Image (cartoon, rainbow, N blue to C red; front, side, top):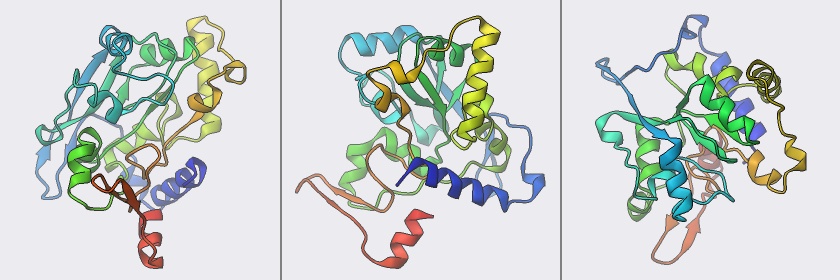
Length: 239
């Protein structure tokens, strides 16, 4: 599943929404029963991130996401307690990292060092699977599709200034240059990096795990992956 194709599909879904759905983003969500709930984002600072790297709990030769961070056992995320994911603060490592919320200063810190940062939304089911992959796989159920953001968060995740995962890649490249000018640093050329492929890797907007697609079933006991063959199922999980 290519990132470009997935992004186009996600944006196609968003374009069908009424314009009134595009509103100012805020860290708040609503449950399906129309009751209000507020999402909190766990803060991950540069010191703790570096500790994970220095103790070899976190690999930097592959993209970093909520699953890899949760698997260090040094950082806990509880989807059942309305925690929406990770908010990164003061990072200085050269990495490709996906979080759920980041400030402009943090984005600049990552990109100044030649890294890439993406902010991406995870619904409750997807986040619970992402932070507890072994427990999820043991259930023997298909990997879910990530849902698109609720209406009040669409603006945030389609904004290239936030490095939103649903933003136009060309506009993100432009905003990377603008931010470098604002903070007074030269943006490193990713083409000169030996880690180019890793730094440019992105998930499809519907993906929960890197390398695994929605609809697949991971059998840990037999160490096999089962993929849907029914055309209708394949179409459902690809949409």
